[in-house]
Length: 422
Image (cartoon, rainbow, N blue to C red; front, top):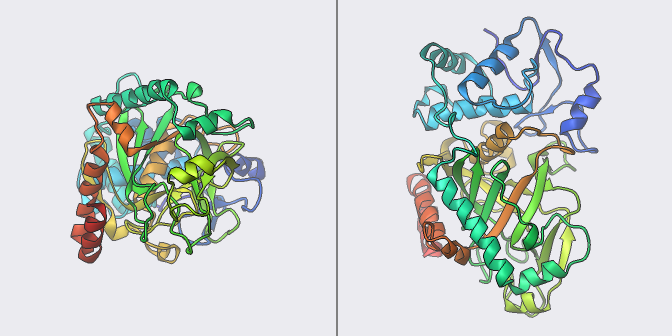
């Protein structure tokens, strides 16, 4: 059986207008009318093949619980890529069967073998019965936290949120009264730790919690800029609160490096910059008192290398080194996670892809202009105490759990991070 991958299309399934098709999923400028692959400078046009192998693959993935939305269109498109890659990751991480190989969305003999096994065994993903109306207990706890957070800050708005309320222009950062936590939406929570501290070494010391389809997944990364001198002076900090993001692309200016990410929905999200004379590279009291909030269209949610990389000019960045799945199991992605763009020749974005793929398959519309929105709520670590079932120590517990990835793969970095997180 032929290998299936991004761009392969069943006979007769190529869209009549290729430009119109890619116009739904690509940014308006700087991108080709081809599918953008994982590797640097990898673009693939439609490759029409006889038969209906892609349709059959999509049908199987839907029955297994990996393609709940979208058309069974016979096109190995971005949603099919996410679905196939999640199936491979599920076999590797939940079934713990490494024989399927790397989760790369290239459907070859190994993946077909497992697809056949699932089909003959009548298997489905264990999340197939979960939903926003039938959530897990952990999902309920995190949603409860968000509702309590809104109630708390409506009653006692912080100085930062008072500045947000006073901002008069249109923005993708919502006023507290407009925060929405409808379970049918996909929610991402960023938990910021130590933003008021001047870091000499900015590390991935923050946690991201994905709430999707009644399930909870956790990721590692950073919500803060890299240290002064590495990027720019007076770095921007995204303000705490709820922000609307859309499907989009990061590094649109580079056809070699551009990849799928999340961008402010329309107007930009609110930031506040590090003020002269305050603690450098920190969001401290002086910044809050003297700084002004500003709209910014460049604060994306994107990949951040492996488990120790931190690429950000104020963006919210997700590590590829590992994650915690819906069973609260730590999943080590180290062996196939790229640390840099150059390593994407034979590695992947790993855990970042898991987050991207989950949001992709559980969203009904993934177009860049009219697609579903990602509701991103940035909170401070102390906010976790508003929900007793979670508590302020939760972020540290999650990070310490993630340290086991470094303990198993990079002992020197493990010792460094252990000391920095202490």
